[in-house]
Amino acid sequence: MTHAQSHTTDQFDETLAASDHGVANAAVDLKLYDTATHAVSRFEPIKPGEVGMYVCGATVQSAPHIGHIRAAVAFDIIRRWFERLGYKVTFIRNVTDIDDKILDKAAAAGEDWWARAYHYEREFTHAYNELGVLAPTYEPRATGHIIDMVHLIERIIDNGHAYVIRDEHGELTGDVYFDVASWPHYGELTHQKQTAEVDEAAAVADRMGPSVDASGDDKYNPADPADLSENKRDPRDFALWKRPKSTDPADARWKTPFGTGRPGWHIECSAMSYRYLDGMFDIHGGGLDLRFPHHENEMAQTRAAGYRTANRWMHSAWVTAKGEKMSKSLGNGLSVPVVLAEHSAWVVRYALGSVQYRSMLEWSDQTLAEAEAAYERIMNFIGHAADALGEQPSRDEITGVSADNLPVDFVAAMNDDVNVSRATAAIFTQIREGNTLLARLAGNADDADRTALRAALVNVRAMLDTLGLDPLASPWIDGGDEAGGDSSALKTLGELVDAQLAARAEARKNKDFAKADQIRDALAAAGITIEDGPTGSTWTLAPSR
Image (cartoon, rainbow, N blue to C red; front, side):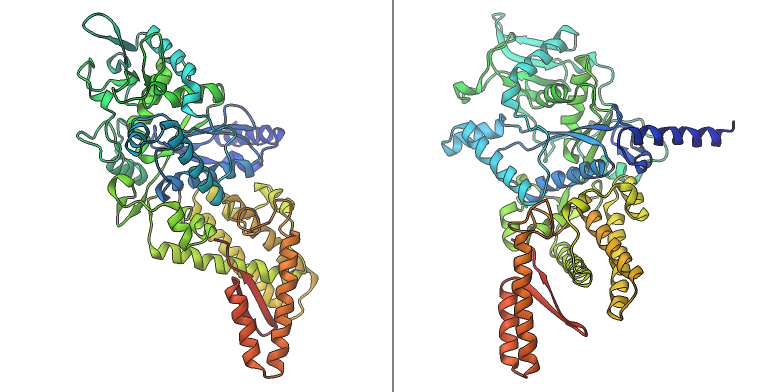
């Protein structure tokens, strides 16, 4: 048997194995980037038919901004593609609800730290929901897993990779540091032995993302005060547990075998990923700025405890404004409520997901204008196609479309490290083909054209749904439901608008143009766009804000 024959046979066997677990045949071609290797490689789940993902969530110190939500949208799209491929996804997104920034800001505002954390946790949840980000399978809080963290730290100490700090009297201080020198694998995530060829995305990550190669202050992730302690044996050592500050309230301190204190920044994710994904930790995700120190330290401490870390590390790039990372600390953050006051949630999500997750996203008026134009093109086709067919496919039909039945150019793009730009191009290719069929139907085309038009409409909506953008799904339609795009509310709206269009047509026939304009203006004020054509007038609904 030749090597080529062996490869073909292996791929055939893997396709059969995938189908046995309800996974689409297309799944065997999925390739994803790994930050640790700087390479795109084929994805193979730990457990057949299942995917375990852990994505770092928010530190709930203040209101969410667009930079935060970009990462959430990016990994939501990745998750949706896994689900479209037929995988059962366990998706964990943590909440950091104990942190120096939370404590300091709460104290400055005269608030309880836990009340501030809960308030902003709810704001993040509201932003996720408004922008169509699916709820995680579990969303654990750091403060709910203190016992898990203490257990993990004890294992690291027992394995000889951490040390406890005592004061001059031999008393426990509450400080515990990871001993980097004892762990020869430290730096494997972000400090690679580079080959002669490194792809551009990796080069961008190295230039812009904090790493062990970069010295000096990190303006995006200021150092934890505990990590600046003179008690450390090595400047690279980092806090697993830390003594409380004198200003910390009594309810922000926990008693442990190594003294009273609270968690270091990194330990919570190691504890919670092990708790919820032990044995199926396929992917760890987060923003590019978390590569170092957070994820580097997390990988080291997890493995030093004797546990497996993620098989693959994935990082979404930043939202930039004039080339600079969008960040509250730099004063150029755009809060989600402010942006949504000026643009529909659908348009904002489209803009946030308009480029591949590893590409920097420049946030500008042009980005939003392009998203607005995309909405108009999409809704025009969906509306006109449904009018021509006399029906709108149900949500059940749209969500039931397998990746194997989607257009091959869309599938190829999504399987190529979730290349959303190419996938979006495939959607508009299908829309152009659908519009050609619409033109033929206006000339009384045959049943084959009607069948092809319906298939194009289903494809367009299913591809959009894979990106979280089917405009006839919740949350984009107020009062809509996931059971069908032809919900009763939408039907009622259609009947009312059609009646107005009929009255407008009658007014124009009678040359009562003032009345016709009055009807058009009233519909426009209600968010209904009218388009006059040779076969009559059609309408589209602007996305809700």
